[in-house]
Length: 488
Image: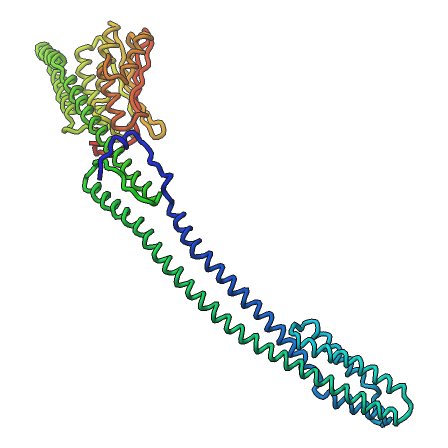
């Protein structure tokens, strides 16, 4: 892979105008397959429905025609014969049978489409009308012989023709039904054949396109997996993103390389911060082991011994021992607030022996806060500043007050004195030095930087002061209780 660290650092976005999303490709496959299938389904369904409607219509016609009285001629001829001879079995003119035949004929005319069938049923209907007229004509004739002649020449002939045309209609409709069934089977075979061929073509196209799409997706993903495996083994060289036709895969590859770039820069930043922290801690530790402080303390011990104040000498020696022991803290950079309190207490005990006429101190830190952690040598430089730049400059007895309280998930520590304080200009310069690499207030700036490196930029120091009223330094740290060093 080609390196492109400059491109990643600048955050230049890749051009995705020529890329196609995975969803778009899948929709394309779906549409290319679904549209022809839908068309085929609609065509087959429409053809089947049309044939079904035609078949059902003809079948209904055949069924309706079958309702026609198969003994129509015999029944009508017999009833007319009884009527003509004025038999005791006569029920009158059989007009109801004729009316029933007419109703059937009219119903069939409305639904029949075959030409020959329509001609036959129309003829049957016309003959029914003639038969009805002939029956009424016989009813108006009084002579027996005349009525007998009309029965022979008209009624018997018409009933025979009506029954014949009804059978003719059934014949043509049955033939039409059989032809329709044959045509339907042949057409459905053709349609099914076309459907199978089209399905095979679509299946081949789908498999071919899916294979191409799979190679366009799987191959870049395999390369991305190899890249991630290399990153997992520690390779943080920023490389040219893998080129893919699918937008999601391209975004994934670009995101990995951007992530590697940011991770590499963050590691470099953390390394620089760690070096700076070690440097400031060493400088701070060296500043605490001041030869002047040690010389002066030893001189005080000698003076106390010479003055026969052995108990005071022992006390200051113990305080000095505790001071250096807590300064070393077994090599740890993070200690508890209880240890930091003992450290500044030892320091203040030593300084009170030296400046008993100038300094008093109070430490008010609640016991429930002493299990929380903070960077070593956080409060001692602040106490030292309060003594040398506040109390001693005042040249009269002053008070150094160390307090601690909890506010939510934060601990607020305060180191205040009632010394000379600072002018507005001096205060602004000290505040500015907290975030500057150079300037006065090295001890304050070192403490501020170490807190922010360990806990974040929302924590650190605040300085408040006023001329002739003293100075107060506020330390804000989170409530953390782990005894393991952070970021080391």
